[in-house]
Length: 181
Image (cartoon, rainbow, N blue to C red):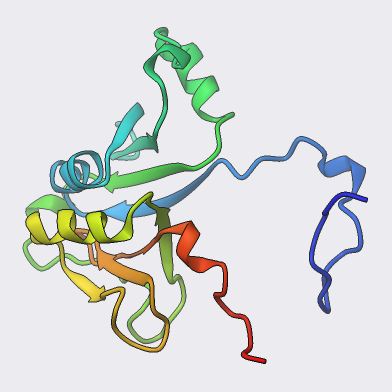
């Protein structure tokens, strides 16, 4: 039998057939200044912008980003690319409410200050040490370095809006959460 899910209280024994084909498409973060955030996510994190959508009547823009998308897979036509973007996995949507970039005191709640709510997004990297060196080179703010705290080999950085980003190297996590014998 193939793996379907770990079982814990509250976990359905099987996925309802009506949910077949459901895909977690994207998570959204609100950003104060899209120029600053786009620089961070494209230059520091290596993401590419798949699509920007403007909603002038409501005064906001959406930027859909993805990492590791081969250019030949992305449709050139804007409408087709919009539909295609909403069929992908692992998309980050940055939402910009127009004018926030001009308000020096404006700040979104990062979810980690009180009252806590949203926690973080996570990037897997092939080499955690190289990623940490890259972040240091680019003066990225660390919440926690991989060698700090009780949970080793897991780092947390902040994006320009203060949202936390977990950084992990999957190969280092085989014993994560396992209780010592």
